[in-house]
Amino acid sequence: MLNIALFGPPGAGKGTQSKKLLEKYNLTYISTGDMLRTEIAEGSDLGMKAKSIIASGGLVDDELIVQLIEKKIKTNPQSKGILFDGFPRTVVQAYILEGLLFKLNTSLSAMISLEVPEQELIDRLLLRAKTSGRTDDSLDVIKVRLTEYENKTKPVSKFYNEKNRYYPLNGVGELDTIFGSIVEVIEKVKEENKTNVVLLGKPGSGKGTQGNLLAKEFGLVYISTGKMMRLEISNGTKIGKIAKPYMDKGEIVPDEIPIQLIERKIKENPNAKGFVFKGFPRTIVQAYILDGLLQRERMSVSSLIEMKLPTLEAIKRLSARGKTEKARPYDAYTDLIVNRLEQYKQKTVPVIDFYKNHEKYTSIRAEGTENEVFEALKGQVSKIMESNY
Image (cartoon, rainbow, N blue to C red; front, side, top):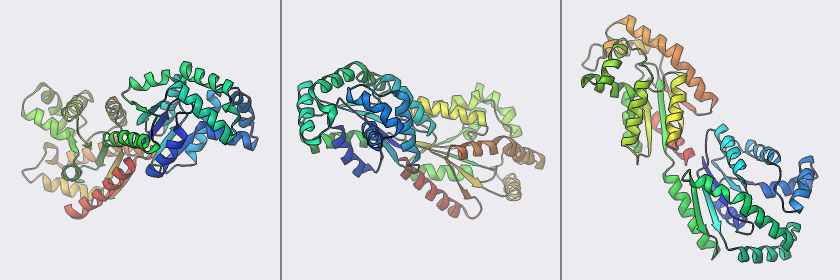
């Protein structure tokens, strides 16, 4: 999701620029000020609680704001992103926003701040008072609001600056020029929004072949923990020696091994558009590990794609592979093949349920020709990338 917070003091022009951004990017608009005024106009309990606070230029209680935002988000479940206008206004609210977006399996893409001198702000707000009739635009209230902004809201910029998500822009000038500067920042942020796909399916479903094809098709980096561990074994490294007995039996290698290999691969590809993960995560614990690894790099799993294959077909494919030069040690005997399929059922199927519950799941049938399966996967990844941006 593309989540933008438009930041700046009262009168900076956030509302005007928000309207233009909504038209361009089709985002869900969350203006705490507008929502509160609506609640007041409707005479709701929440509105009545907020009315006196707004009239004096103060900041409304965080609990009320959170209720408003959650209500708005729930009414737009298919949104491609959110534009926040007037939130967060305090460092505490910044933490609240991080938590709210975490629940949606996303995060704030950028905080864009419109910088305007104080006297210009006062002139704008007094002019707005004459044209809009807003009671919170009197000179005394304006001064209170600007003081509140300076003391409570401006520190939010430091919070996001430390996360490399803060972008200050000149808020004085032609509206279209300012809008162009905002769009430039957003397009830059979109380029940094990586697509990370997990391929899961029974042993023999073709994840390796298809993962490589997908990476080449979409300019992603292919990460196969199995392939990397086989290379470590071939090179006789310390990691390889630890992994070998597990790999020979087709069992899950201790988590510290794939963690090292995945971290190394990500660091080797800092400019990647995203990654295709094959063979990881294979357990619920590994799903949490992958989330942690990606969050450190300001990324997340975009979607898991399950490659569905009947068990009998999986056994046939693995047995056939065992008679070729591509054979794995665990393809040699039927009992080893059955053991892998049992491990998949017991430990990996719950991972699929995990991503289903987080609404990051899709599937394709892994039967058919290599090209037929690839076309199905390509269609799913295209949809994932479209929703990701």
